[in-house]
Amino acid sequence: MKNALRRSIQSLIGLSILAAPLAATTAVKMDLPRLVSTADHIVQGRVESVETRGEQNKIYTYVSVVIDESIKGNGRRAIVIKQLGGTFGNTIYSIAGMPHFRTGDQVILFLKVRKDTAFDVVGMNQGKYEIKNDIAVTNVHGITLIDPKSGVTSDAGFVDRVPAETLKKRIRELMR
Image (cartoon, rainbow, N blue to C red; front, side):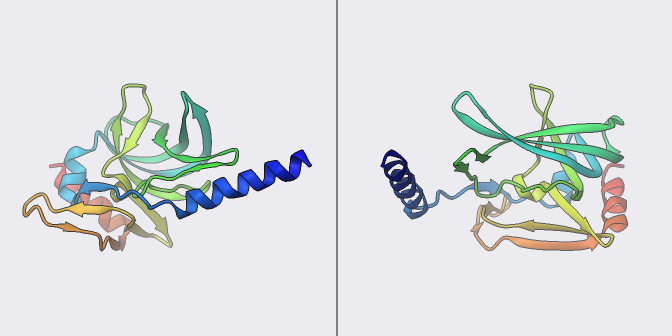
């Protein structure tokens, strides 16, 4: 009986979470020159692991990335990204616009150093390019973007596809 009651309560909580209105995330739209100038590090690598932890009544996701190539910043062999949100136990805490990672993903990342030695992805999901078949793809969605020049907002998001080597070449040109 207690298990049935517990499951019913968990179901009701889950349904109320799904029915709650989603909060919008707003960020400044970042073109490639802005991503490059803002990032402390730009790397190409492979996601080695994704781990979610509960800390201080919050949920954080830790993403370990093995670096294949350092494009900007000192030559680290690996980095850890720490971002708010994730799934921990039966709790899902999702933040619109946060990049999602899967073990094995090949990525180009624009990173900012945190005070705790981990890294943030610059511009939320704007700063993550996933590489598939030598094509770098960024898929910016779930976020309201503000154009820094005009102040106009857009919920449309965008997808950018470019050969990975071409993207890295553009990044290097912008760093000169």
